Image (cartoon, rainbow, N blue to C red; front, side, top):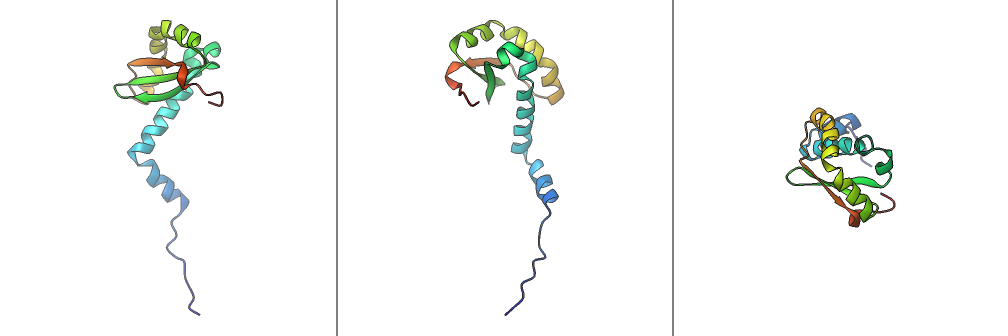
Length: 110
C-alpha cells in the first residue's frame, strides 16, 4: 500500500487573511459594524423596536420596525438620526444619505 503524505495544508490564518482581502467580505464587515451603532443612534426605546435590515443602492439604509407606529415615529426623527449617524459613518468611511423605515421587514427573532 502506498503511503499518502499530506503536506499541502494551508494554515487557517492564511485562509482568513485571504478572505479578509475580498471586497465583498470587507463591505459586509463594514456594514455589520455600522449596524452595531444603531442602538446608540436610535436610543434604547427605539433600538428594542427597530433594527437595521439592509442597504440599498444610493446610500439608503433600510430599518426594520416592529410596527407602523415605530416606523412613523422614526420617520419624523430621520434628520436627527442621520446627524447622529454622521460620526460613525465618517469613521467607517461610509455614506448613508437616507433611511427607509419598513414594518414589513420585522421578524421577531431579528
